[in-house]
Length: 512
Image (cartoon, rainbow, N blue to C red; front, side, top):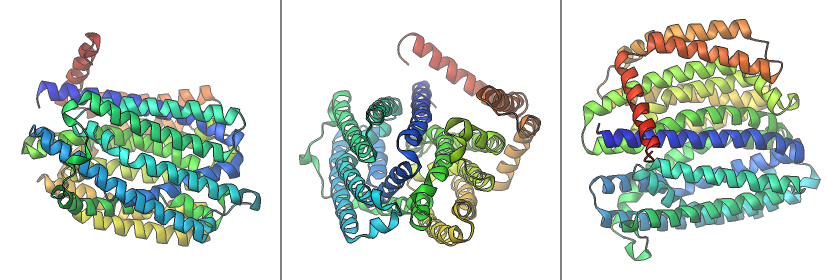
């Protein structure tokens, strides 16, 4: 891997984690504010409405991801004419599909279907429909602008994309805090959220035109010839999007429809915590996705195998560390953060922790098959997983309540993605599955044991922020120190050390 590319990867990772830190910090601030100013039921309504927006993303038919991959290939070959065609065609296809999806959503809202999914008190019903309509309008305006953000990713400038997202997150925090403090309720929150999303999309449009003048956007570049080539892989990304909605986007809706929006809040806050941690991991691997696409296009198989093995080892280590931390200290964190009244039961939380561990473990393989557009088989399996999740969640919510929803997601995710993705990734790169995983687990057993023993000794001591920080930090330190001494191979240590040294030097001279 060239020095320039390595430096860009490190820059991308640094910017991505900065954005992730900004997002996590903003969530830590806004969640308690929502609970305090909106209350449990109204905040639950807003969380369900956000979940209802997710199904609209399936109407994007995978065009954002297809556009990113095709732009990355055009950029790798220095073909700016093709890049302009891809950008304009992707924007147009995404705009049309988004409008169709929003029109269908409005029809459902008018027919009363959405009202039945939002089980609220009678005093909140009228506002619930208004919140849905405002959110749909904001989504319709903001969604097509995604292609400009994806262009930055395609050109391996994830650092620029993440900086823009950080600004968007901070602006959203500022606006929401002002709205809540001034007495705004859930309708005002929906309006503010929609405005920020649209403004952010416009910012990425202007930024891309300024940063890459050769990528000038014009509807004159829309290509009828490019559209079919985007529709074929786009269909399978559509299947993945639909599957993602069924796996990750229906839990709040199922709880709302069966138990009521008031039951959503505690479950959603616990899910938010695991989602933040999952996002930290996804950020690492998604940052490398354009590089994986480029290595695949350049047929550098040996480099790609090395990157994948190291990524798999890292993913297993992160899954173990996060699993230990959450199992012992996760519920204590929620009690200190948002209040004891919104802490889910232990079985539900452990199920959510299991979902996180399985998902983190599968991330390297997921991004490998998506970045190389080798996702056809997985798209159908993922759809089966989503269908199974919806069926189990709806069945078990009637049996075990909120806990059943978490179990439905855990069982379906472990049986499909947890088993198929690692096998598919190893097979694609001609790597031995059992041998590779066994070597990784053998290296990671000592740090996992050290972290578990420290957490076992310190559990139950997190009764204040000081105790929680000390207990969780000690557990993390035991894991990481043991990892550095025992699990990290010398060549891996050299790669990490050199990467961060290069990043530090670049930053010092103003080039980072």
